[in-house]
Amino acid sequence: MPTVFIETYGCQMNVSDSELMLGTLAAEGYVAVDGPEDADVVLLNTCAIREHAETRVIGRLGELRRFLKKDAVLGVTGCMAQRLGPRLLDSDSRVSLVIGPDGYRALPTLIESARKGERMTSTDFDLEEHYEDVQASRFDGVKAWIPVQRGCDYRCTYCIVPFTRGNERSRQLEDVVRETAAVVAQGLTEVVLLGQTVNSYHDGARDFADLLRAVGAVPGLQRLRFTSPHPNDFSDRVIAAMADVATVCEHVHLPMQSGSSRTLKRMLRRYSRAEYLDCVARLRAAIPGLGLTTDIIVGFPGETDEEFAETLSAVREIGFDDAFMFKFSPREGTPATRFPASETVPEDVVDARFDELMKTVRGMSRDRNFRRVGERTEVLVEKEARKGELMQARSRDFKTVLVPGDRTLIGQYLHVELTGTTGSTFTGQVVRERKALPTAG
Image 1: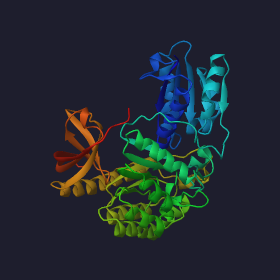
Image 2 (image 1 turned 30 degrees about the vertical axis):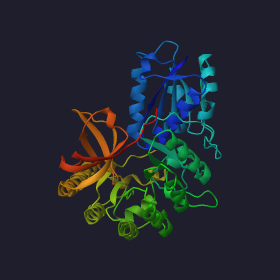
Image 3 (image 1 turned 90 degrees about the vertical axis):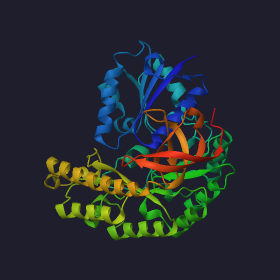
Image 4 (image 1 turned 135 degrees about the horizontal axis):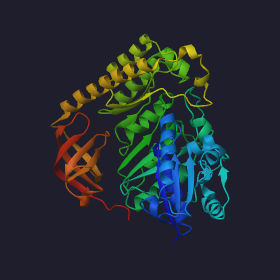
């Protein structure tokens, strides 16, 4: 039987797409293997959000050339494939396939053509494609990533996603509910709804509030999460649904990007600092104990010392639980690359601001976490931890908690006391088990 190895880079949407690709190939008799050395087909599912992500893939392609099987098919899929298209074939003679996010249905046919020596790209957008009839091969035995929306209609000046994922389109609510019921029947107890701006979901008749209520009511579902939302789309209806539906977890990843209204305007984020703060206030008022994480960009073109200071003050005022922090990375074709060169922030200034931001975010997070030691909370055991005889678990508000035990705990819900913290990760002692649930086979 032919074998396939898929290596995934980037966001949770890419993880979900890799599961779709593997499901498509499994239906044609392919078997997944754990490494590229033994694979008949090797696919790198890529990210294009920052230059560093693409550089990693280019380096990885060079590594793969040394130990792939002679007749193995090597393909690049995902956002980098969509962005670069035929240029990837031109830059690496070993690559046979370049396939964008809307081309995975044709994978088996494209691979067979590649076996015959053809080299090709498939990067056309298909605004009707949701892969409804494809059964994904899930990587995770505890939670399922379920796309509810593809593409993006926002046009942030720094972002490549609209160029790699196309325009926004949402699945029908009934299809999302059906898929949720199917994964719960397989033994998965947590679902994460995915979209580029997931809370702007609308299937023509139902909005994201309706979706949360419908999915959250699926029998057997224990936890419901979503990522990544946009601050503009947290309507009162959506926030009310989050507060009302017991399965919706008390955590929101709410990208801020900057705490300066002037910078946000140049980013075309379509909200001001005050509007972002208001969104945070409405969420926290409705959902006690809400965990709040964010994304922040440092060194956006034209960012002044005063504007960066506004970002720091917003971070201090809000008190995020954690943040993904990035140095601005210009992406070919985006409006931000057309700003005057005089607005480019010097690299040493960007580095200094990044270090200060990280120190501020992590310091506040550490202080908050130390104050929580001694609390009791529910966690879901997800996988083995990297070190020691510990298991990694996650609280409803998205805290990582390490607990003693072995693989038999995976998929179980435990009540634990938080006994310590490194500043970012907690250790916990089991108080009692709530229930043991079967994991997907």
